[in-house]
Amino acid sequence: MAVRLIVAVTDTDWYEHLRAIPNLGEANFWAPGGANFRALQPGELFLFKLHAPHNFIVGGGIFTYANTIPVSLAWEAFGEKNGAKSLQEMRERIAKYRRAGREDRSDFQIGCRILTDPFFLPRDQWIEVPQSWSSNIVTFKTYSTDEDEGRILWEAVQSPLAAQSPPVFREERARYGEPYQIQPRLGQGAFRILVTDTYERRCAITREKTLPVLDAAHIIPYGEGGTHDASNGILLRRDIHCLFDRGYVTVTPDLHFEVSKRIKEEFENGRDYYALHGRMMAEPTAPAYRPARSALEWHNEHRFQK
Image 1 (tube, rainbow, N blue to C red):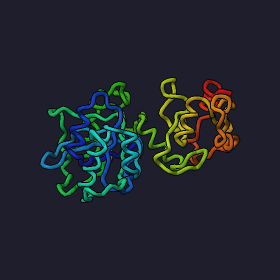
Image 2: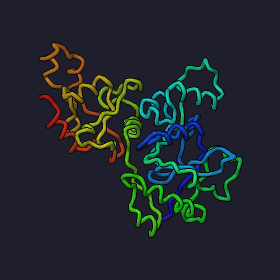
Image 3: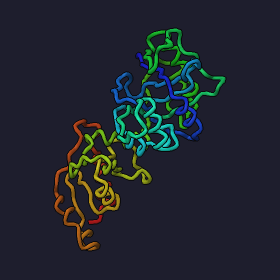
Image 4: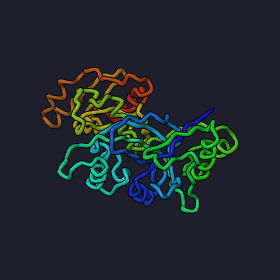
């Protein structure tokens, strides 16, 4: 099975900031423009190199997801995992690449390429770029493991991948078998972006689409055994998310929104929420991303205050 991988040119500041973060589970390799990224499938390798004259691959990660998003959402989802110490610093870098004036306060649309299990190679393990790499490449180049250069790159990064804790794949399969796509482990940031896009950036209950007030809610909380999978998430308006987490509202296994009588009993209000009682939740079109029935049953049984 042929597997694609890319080598992308990294911003040095991004690289230096992220490699200093211990136990980094995910990162956003962002691009200052909003062009769509379709070079890889989830589970393929995303490698990065420094700007010339340092023509070495210095790290990589497992590609998970890509889309164009506002910089504000990227910061909310990943924070310093964007490779910057603050939103202001990130905005300044984007503005520099876009040649935007300092007075430009727009919410820049940027390319978001989410990597899980990122790794950074020690200096003595840096990998020379393939001979086909050209100095005029400013974004990335795609390789495939059914070609010599792609296969060499794949084999060169197996030890760093195997060193991940927990390992992202079985080392013996990677060393002695054919290349294959790796199942990415989603982190909190990837979960936020994926659920937001899965619900077409609209609240599943109210259909509100003002992005700053929308949250990716875990059905089963992560701290109680829930996962970061899209099937354990629903995009909700922020106030409804808060009520959902506290058990004042729920979504039934047949996808109806229910509001607890305790809102009225405890707060002598809740008219706007009761108006939504019984409403059918808007679900994603892709079956794999629809909320898991078992997760909804858990929320109804263990969280909802009837």
